[in-house]
Image 1 (cartoon, rainbow, N blue to C red):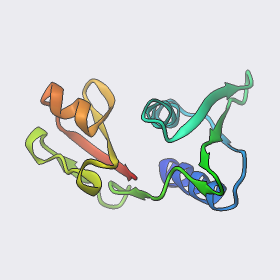
Image 2: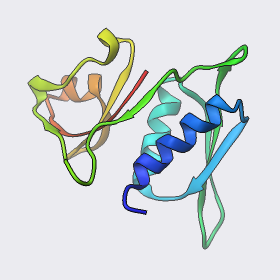
Image 3: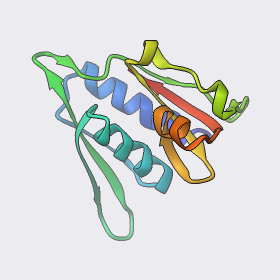
Length: 128
């Protein structure tokens, strides 16, 4: 697998469209950080890391009736073309209704946290 973050976003997107209660994926620290940001921003119900030797991340999806809370996910910086932004160039997703996730020198941050700390970095994805 050349892009594990894209795989994670695709699993979440497909699980939401299929109205699955939860999705599972192989564990990595960056995927766990992205999942924790999704939980703190209110896009998913719960994030759990399961297993000892072969860890898995289990994400419980959140719904409003028969519709997923997550309307869309888009991977921005890809392995073939990285996208870096400065602190003043961080985009607003859907006019501030969505969230951009950045990889900064202080770890993964949302767009608003990065603006507050005046940090730029690699623009991983947009979620709305």
